Length: 393
Length: 174
Image 1 (tube, rainbow over the protein chains, first blue to last red):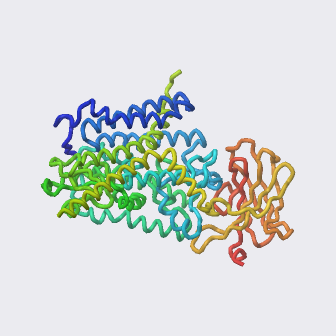
Image 2: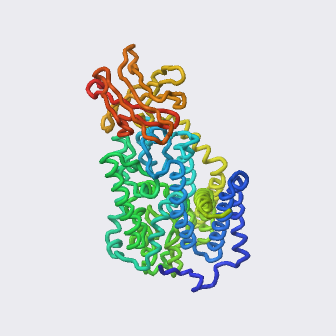
Image 3: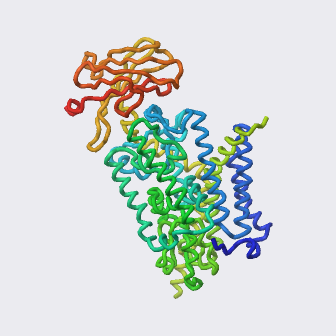
């Protein structure tokens, strides 16, 4: 990717002292978040917590020092995407010896809640006061990730992040961002650009189908038939033709949308062209105060921003209007790619391109604080799991 | 012109106030906000769909050391794909004999409706072999099923044995 702000190409954005000063609140926040781990956690968890504090604080420092957002955020996000399954699968294997979830655990409410199913729950919850998911509403000893806890967490995050949930909190997105980053060449670029306007509509169509079918059938249709990430988390135990078919769909979607297509296109294809939860999350961009805007006086229509966008959240028309599309997840790729400083962070209600760094800082403090709290604890847990595996005495 | 500048300034002040509030919200997430939203969901009067939870308890039958909890029949909604069923829970597993065979009155009319039999292996992860014999036409017999579907199962779930007996669809509608 053509990155304007590479440390090799231009002088540092800020002095070390000023960058350290701006990083101090995040360092203190990280310490605060992991204090209970140091008090009550195991030695392995404490090691994980120290590693995460250094990791998250270090990345924030680099964001401050270089003025770049995307590549440092991506390091965190890819680490989250690849380490989350390690910790999660290890806990499943330790607990039940398999990644598959047997029917006995579903009927006893032991399925951990996944935020991806949230849109499908709305209609049955509103009209029948029923949750069509085999979890438990309140946390239990065998299922701390209950529905109330996870929806509470998701909603609080959404108020702060809007659609940026997809680039600062969603551990699934990190997996495909990782595969997209592996590839050096961008293939199928013309296809993606030409048909972008149609491809962008697919997640909305899937969202509509999933919401209506879940309400009609009273079952979590996305979880049961369409979630690619079941492949790297847990899936219903194969016990008949239907569950075998479901497993086949999960693996096919994972390989196609999360591995192969991101490798080919350098885009987050599952997020951009499939994920119904991502489409649902886009709606919260309307109430979020932060966005990315384009200074039309500086823009030379080079389309570097459009090329760099991982989820096709920019079109020529939207750039002409000086805006991103509704599905922008505020990852910062376009801002970092723009050689003319035309793409800028923006606080709604303020003039465009006036003090964009202030808008970036205000957004990043909230986003990084929550990323440290949620993603950081997942990372610490995964690191602790790996420490357990090490032959250390 | 002057009014325009004033309104723009007012808008900027509002925007920065909103941004400061967003930061305050972010800082309060782990301490207040997450818990508050979780409590709101927990007290919203929602319940897990009966296909997963088994529905509501009808009555409890004591059998000395262990007890049998009989649930209300669960009938599918218009397009729901499950068969109608009745859930029966035997608990606690620790207090049960090695082989359980019980005739159970499911509808509360004083007459037994099904005979449920299963062995209780000492190993909680060992497969459970059970069979259900219907004693009238309202219920459907099955055997040797560990967890085939949400409507017919004999499975161990923690300290409970969960049995789901399918109801005859035609009779269940009445």
